[in-house]
Image (cartoon, rainbow, N blue to C red; front, side, top):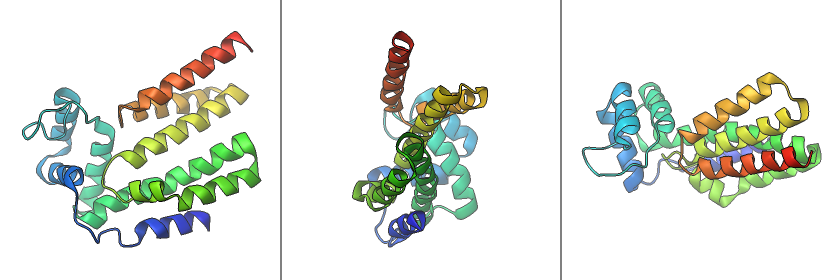
Length: 192
């Protein structure tokens, strides 16, 4: 019910406003480039629209996954923004799992509820930008790191590594989270 509430809050009037500048650039890229060109532009050129503005700020994972989403559901304000809503739903699941892992079931329910009604989370999950995918990989990496530290099972470490790699190729700021995680691991290694 909490995830349904969060999804409804995010879906409400999602296509009412037109794209803002960065969302427009995202939509333009989805309409004018194929998957191979998006990969080339983001990996080699560092920018999803290298012919239009110089920058090195666009990692590929969000744009590639959004490209395939747009092929299934079209390029429109509602469609591209709804991809972020779907990613929020998956993030909400990881929010609950992580909070349950660290704080117990009761606190996980409270955390999930607060996450579902959070105004910044609603705003960012109504944009055709990579913020929700970044959050998804951040929550997944923290969850799998917690599981791996408790169980030391290879599949948890593998899922942690996959989350970190995909998160790093989703948003440059993921490196900051990774640095904190590595610092935490070094602390545990020094003081077991």
